[in-house]
Length: 185
Image (cartoon, rainbow, N blue to C red):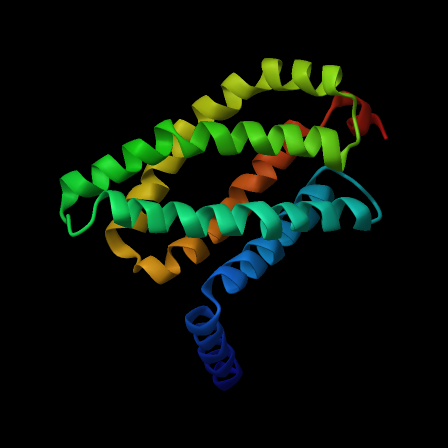
């Protein structure tokens, strides 16, 4: 079995080298789909909602993976050649003050409008009510993840690491983003 894992990892690394954006997008999509399947199971949904799963995968593929790819490239440009703990702290702070609030709000809006198909007014009220709690929770969790990512992960693996952790975070966000009407279904 370890031979299969090693061979799969090598193929993944080759794809990451040849097609970094596409590989990161596919990885984020698959992990987003996995997190949605888990969230569906946790929330008591008896039969997997395939449409919902595919829309969450689309979010990972079309948005989360590419966003992460370009965010980490931008961080390298902004902090070009700078190393050390103070640089890592600046990267984490910049990420937490810019992309973290945006990504959490965007996911909640995407989930309500696209995945659930709810009207804008309902989604806006849901975001107003729950976003502050979601963002405060994010600020307790993601700075540590960001520190590990910037301190220990090579640039090419940052989106993979972030996507893996984000698949766990997305279970929380996914459950938090759901409306009361869906919970009753």
